[in-house]
Image (cartoon, rainbow, N blue to C red; front, side):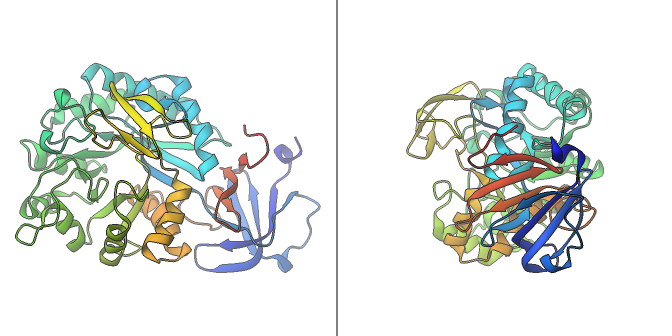
Length: 399
């Protein structure tokens, strides 16, 4: 194929670059990197490139980074198979996601270990351009609070264990980048300190912590909140809880599932007013039913009924989402009144900063990975590039 030999030249679209917006511009992709970009009149010659003409009303934004996703298109991280992760890395570019954290769920030690070994192996042996990149693993549970279990199977929930974690991260080839835990439980603060010392994000989630307990966790090194509002002690005028602490402490970046189901639109707006564009991270928390029709699916060994945009356990508990990250941007615009630039910060820049990879991802700038999403006039994903290779084109073949 021609583009395998030549660098790619995208031209004609608006560009939402790191430090400026260009109305009609070009981007050159070469050797998996963004080489340069600028106004279209600055192109010297197109002869040496594989040229892709993009309609004038379309927009180029940096690839989206989902730090909390369990599955898509019938696959789940807990399947612990190569095929499951291959399905995820192939499907996610269709919604604009170019990299993500493979997210586990509370399960037996054996099931968790199989998933970690599989993900660690995939990360180190099987990544390739043209597919979404697995940046690492998000260990969600089992160090959470049964009172706020949600869809985390309560039978397998345990207190934080540094010994277990060390073993698991060794099995995962040191690929665990983020851990969701309840810091108020025995061993919780010690775990937070250990994660901080080892450069791993400690996230407060599935937690019944009081405001004071969250403050202690922040002092110990916690800097992240898992799916704000969902399965955590809420905001009360005499007990601010996890939500109040998230609002008041800039140290905490807060994930949010902006599907209109997990968090009511008005609460999304309130969160944006409190945390601003630098304090929120858009996630999907999606499960295997995303991209599939209504039906009954598995999550952590539990049957989940998917109907009319909701994924529910048998008792009515929300069980992950079927949200596409590209749609979360549109919802955020509608619910909060923020700008597209703000949503880019929340879905690309902030997760890259949290993961300490802002030098290579999170914005359109020379030298960064060529993770580019092209949106049409309706902000729907029209084309996606993962490290310089086209991974998706609407109406055409994907890899």
